[in-house]
Structures are given as structure tokens and as C-alpha cells.
Length: 258
Image 1 (tube, rainbow, N blue to C red):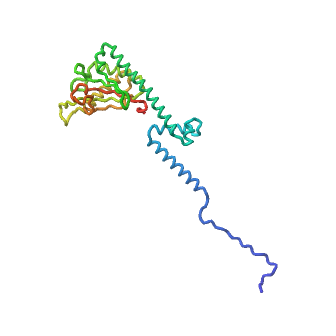
Image 2 (cartoon, rainbow, N blue to C red):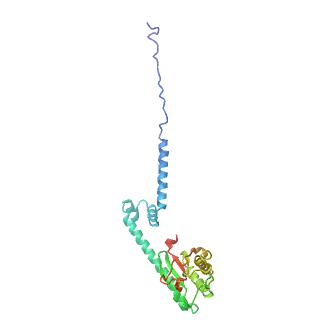
């Protein structure tokens, strides 16, 4: 028989539940932030690797993310083709307007030279055409008028003044410029291991650069100076023709200059 009486108080047993490890939700928030940051990084890297056209489309979306404009609505609806078409049309329209401006500038240069008694006889040696990078103005030698002393990178006085006049006109444009030097295929007298037509063409291009920037044109507007020797002949059938000796000034399209 138990020694405890019937009036003894009941025994209360407390069970303490121990947590094995941390089961809170804070780590999930941190992980979600990390994944979001990584996704944003990959998107930025992808955008940087795309063409200027795609970058502009993305920029237009973020300028109008909720779709107030037609561009934003099209993107939200998944219809990107109209946006691409509109952007392509805008680019073509802008390019056409820029080409018109550059053509007028080229025509003005030719017109000024034709009216100037000092340069009127050189107008026929100025060739203007559009190329992939922009408007190309070429100053071409002839049998009567040479722009450089034979075998040197020294400009004649008339050629220096002509380039200076062109530089003053080009200074009115925001476009970047590329200057190229070209020679004919006559080998330079010092031989293949010494001074060659590559050095000569590059030196002539730099001489033209100095003349162009001698007055109003700023040096920072010049983007590149190239020497091609005889690798880009104007007259491929006659590599010794005078027209192969020339200086090219390329006025880059604004989009290409960015």
C-alpha cells in the first residue's frame, strides 16, 4: 500500500520542446534578393552585348514601363514588332536627314572652291561620295597638281591652305572625322625593310590632320588617322595612276561617332 495519501497534490510534468536548427524565413528573403541581383546583372550584361538598336528599345521601355505611350503598350502586350519597325523607320529618317546635311556641306565646299580663284583649278580633284561610315571627301593628285612633294609627307602651300579651308567648314559639324592616307604602288626607294608606303601614307594623313586643325577645327574632332599605302587603290587597273595618291576625309555619321 502506497505511503502517499489520497490527499497528496497531483504531479505536474512539463515537457520542453527543443528546436533542432533554425527554421525562420529570413534566409529566404536574403536568397531571393541575391537571385534578383544576379538576374539584374545578367540582364545588364546581355543589353551591353546587343546592338545599339536593341539597347535603344530597352531604354525606351524603361522610360515608359507602365505603357502610357504606344511603345510601352506594345511591349507590355508582347507585340515588339511595331516598336522595332517604328525604331527602324526613325533611324532611317534620321540617317536620311543627316545625309542631306552632309551632302549640302560637301556641295558648299565644292562651290566655295569653284568660286575661289586660288582653288578653282583644284575643284576637279575633290571627290565626294557616301560610304558605310559617312561622307567621304577625297583630295586626289593629278599630273598637274600634287598635294605633297614627291616621296615626302610635306604638303604644298596650296594644299595646306585648301585643307585649312576645309577644316574651317568641317568645324561647324558635330561629327567625328577619320583621315586616311593612300599612295600608288610605286615602292619607296628605301626598300622593304626601311621606310615604306605604309609609313608614307600614315605620315601624309597626319600632315593633313595638322593642316585641317590649324585654324578652327579642334583636334578632338579627329577620331582616327589611317595609313593604307597602296592597299585601297582608286584605280585598280593602273596601280601607278596619280588618282591613287590621295587623302580621304571621312565625316562619320553621328550614330557611328558615339
